[in-house]
Length: 355
Image (tube, rainbow, N blue to C red; front, side):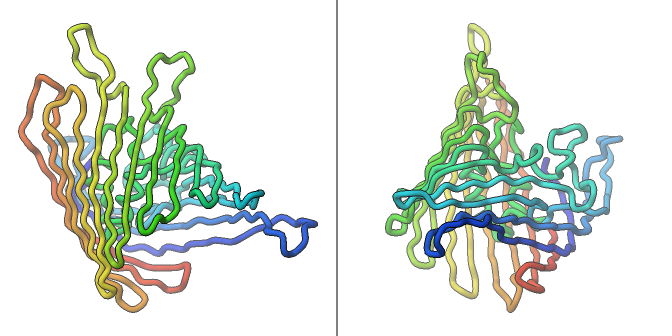
C-alpha cells in the first residue's frame, strides 16, 4: 500500500551488550562470543489522506504511537566461535516486537506478524547459522534479500523513518507472497573484498512466505545475485532477482495455468563528498504472463551536521502490469521526504521526518 503523507517525531533507544561463557582455555586462545543486541524505537505518527476502511470514498487522518519508525524495534542474539583452519562458526537470530504495545500504522489484523509489529513470527526477522573464513561467508536460514539490503544502503533514510524507500519500492509494494524482503530456506555466499569488488549470491529452496510440503511437486525457488564495487568515494552495483515457479505468478496457457517467473533488476550508486552523500537507485521488474512492467527510481541526499544529519529524497513508482491478454495504462505515485536525526549519545537519538 502506498501511503500519501505522514509525519513522525520519535525517541530511539538502542541497547547492546556482550556476553561470554567461562572457558578453561588459555588466555591466548580465541574465545567464543555471544552478543545481545537490539533497539526500541517509538514515536508519534500522523497519517493524512489514508483511504477509510469504513468508506473507500473517504480519506481519513489518524494520529497515534508507532513502533519501529526510524528502524525496527527488535532484539536478537548473534555470535561467533573460532574453529580450526582460520574458520569461525557464526549465527544470528532476531525477533521484532511492539515498543508501543500495538502498531498504529497498520499491521493487518490476524497476520502472522501482528503480535511482533515487525515481520513474521518469533525470531523470524532473521534466523541463520554459517561459516566465515578467508573465502568469505556462507549462511543457511532465513535472511534479508540482497535486494532489500542494497535498497537500505542507497536510501538516505536507511529504509527507515517516514521517508523509507520501502513505502514506494518494488520490495515494499508487490505481491506479498513473493518474499522480496526476506528469504526462507536460504543459502547465501558472500565473497571478501576483492580489490573493491564484493559479490553476494543467494538461493532459496522455498522463497514463499508460507510452508511447502515435501510432497509439493513444484516449489517456489529463487536466485538473487548482487555485485558491487568501491572506487574511492564512489560505490555502485547491480542486483538481479529471479523467482521461479511461483504460484502467485499464474500464467494463462492453452492447457491451463502454470507457475511463472518474476524478475527484478536493480542498479544503484552512492557518492560521498564528505560534507554531502548522494544516492540513486533504479528498480525494474517483469513477470511471465503479465503485460507491461513496474519501475521505481529514487534520488537522495544525506548531509552530516554536527552530531546529526539532514535527510532528503524523492522517488517515483510506475506500474503498467496486468495479467495477459489485458493491458493497462501507466499509473504512478511520487514520494518526497525530508528529515533530521540527532544523536544524544552513542545509543540514543531523536528525529523528525515528513513524507
